[in-house]
Amino acid sequence: MPHKTFYIKTMGCQMNEYDSDFLAQSLINDGFSPTNNDNDADIILINTCTVRAKPEQKAFSLLGRMSDLKRKNPRLIMGVVGCLAQQKGHELLERFPQLDLVMGPREIGRIKEILGQIYADGEKIVATHLEPRPPHPVSCQGYFNGRVTGYLSIMEGCNNFCTYCIVPYVRGREISRSPEEIVNEAKNLISEGVKEITLLGQNVNSYRWEGMEKWNFVTLLREITKLDGLLRLRFTTSHPKDLSEELIQCFGDLDKLCPHIHLPFQAGSNSVLDRMKRGYTRERYIELIDKLRAVRSDIAITSDVMVGFPGETEQDFHMTLNLIKRVQFDSLFSFKYSDRKGTVAAKMDDKVDETDKSVRLSVLQNLQKKISLKKNWALEGKQLEVLVEGYSKKGGQISGRTGSNKIMNFTSNNNLIGRLVVVTVNCGLLNSLQGEMAPEE
Ligand code: SAM
Ligand code: SF4
Image (cartoon, rainbow, N blue to C red; front, side, top):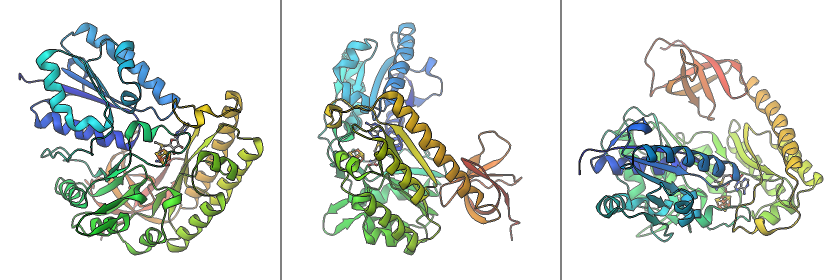
């Protein structure tokens, strides 16, 4: 095959970023070269998200724009991968005839074979089986060089079927990867210079492996924190219904485990939580937060919440605000509920008016802004350990993250990338901290 280039555009969550890295490494191993310019690529893959209406619309408009490139260069191979590809399948080929490939997340291990088929006979391919196991990791020497942080998927899919959520339909049933594969992949990341690993799964707490020995998420965490060269470990996402006492205790016991947990609560009203089929109550959620703080008082807590779930009353919404005030989250991802075709909630009556959803979202976000600011102000004057990742977005400053996952920007003339340094917080802002490095010994 003559030398060809590829361009991958990634939308959506960390899992998609991980999958895009997998695809990129597979393509490089197969002789393709990455390019940052979609105009001169021979292959374009768009890795999409369909979890809410908004990212889905974004993916559609990007596909429309990208289709023009194919009109200019008919030899270009254009593919959609990820959750939207899985959900829409053949429908995407009809709507965007410029596409050559539609590939669901469980099929990414077949990228080499599928591209070979497209190049050989020019046929369009739709690959959307949900049964395949997560593919064996590919390693491409040097791929992660220069990266301080890396993702590592420990499982694929989800069995929870929260009534609003499309994930189990587009990423399939939950399946864990073997501990051996995971530990080897972690070692590979570390050997490439990665200092901080985030373990990924839709519900990491339900990680299970039954081989010669039984593994659960806690045994896996303990094993990975033993790896030399790894400075920090994180994980996401945890489900409150499966958050065990043993896992909570890890925040007290494991030095490398960062003091931060992302624990989505989704709603503060028990009747909404029940109709979402979340499997916990607001009281249980608060109990978990109290236990986490008892083990590690400085733990940062972030979460996902949505407004306007079918049947959500003003009183339900106030229960959500009330829970936010009680917990005092460090930050929140907040969304307007949107129907996802095929889910149970999409068929529920009593949909909340779009204007009411917007008003509720803005009230909620204003409340959270005040809490986030207050939390960051409270850090002023404190010394925090920061893993330096690169340069700040506005430039001129060095940027890293605290263990609590807050962005810290500060000035230094030294090359500190990849190092843990102590920084004093000068100013707490809404989404970041501004600091000053303590003199090094
Ligand atoms: N597995 C994780 C969990 O259980 O929390 C997160 C899954 S989902 C990819 C990320 C977030 O999107 C969810 O926590 C939820 O807040 C939001 N979300 C999922 N479905 C949604 C929908 N139909 N409408 C609005 N937000 C939704
Ligand atoms: Fe979706 Fe619920 Fe599974 Fe999270 S736990 S991916 S919200 S079904």
